[in-house]
Amino acid sequence: MSTDSPLPGGPPLPGGDGEVTGPRAAWPAEAIRDAVVPLLPGLTVEILPEIDSTNSELMRRARYGRAEPVLLVAEHQSAGRGRLGRVWLSGQRGAALSSLTFSLGVPLAPADWSGLSLAVGVSLAESLHQSIRLKWPNDLWFDDRKLAGVLIETASFGEGSGARRYAVIGIGINIAAREAAGMARPPAALRELLPGVQAGEVFSRVAVPLVQAVSAFERFGFAPFQARFNARDALRDRAVALSDGTTGTAHGTSDAGALLVHTADGMKTVTSSEVSVRPAG
Image (cartoon, rainbow, N blue to C red; front, top):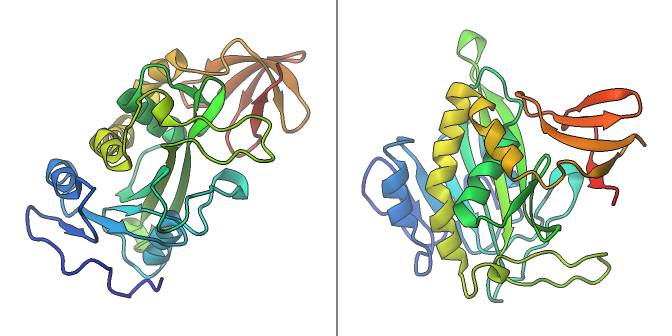
């Protein structure tokens, strides 16, 4: 999709300071827009039938100077992406929605960006179900299986002292059971916890708390989220193996959102740019 092509679904609906575009039948887009605009003036909510990736689309827009706040939902993604270049599989267009894929794009200027993906994970888990755990740094787990993932990307805009960064926070949540061929364990699905739940309902559950969490992170950093993350930490007190070959025991997060791992050489502080982490057993 071209970054300057018109969006499907007809003209924007008026109301508040933002807009709603795209098909709306099964999506509570207007209600979400009305609830979020007081927190994020000028927000638009867009629902697309299909796109390559909601993150890719918002990053394209940012490179063209479009840095307005937006919630962009794709019913189907043809090239969804996860962390470290991994593929996020999405159902095909025309099939029943088996996942919720969307991105929040917002100008953001926190004093420290460390821990943003963890804060987003906390918000999602608390909005969805008490049984959901958080696997550092960007996954939601149920029963030690991946339920959802977070991918954060940024682009700079403006010049000089007025320069800011545009954050694109991509989220994919498995709604229904997915094909698991070739996987050691099948991914989790939200309907295991919330039978019959639909993608539009899930979007309604998570959108407003997500915006609130991002706003709180911009003002206060990771500190308000640290204890909440640790309470749901899927790795805490478990043996883990780091991608650099180091092994140890996970001991929660630091106040900056780094993973703390007790190794044979002492406590190691791990940041998301250094390693990926898997339970060792």
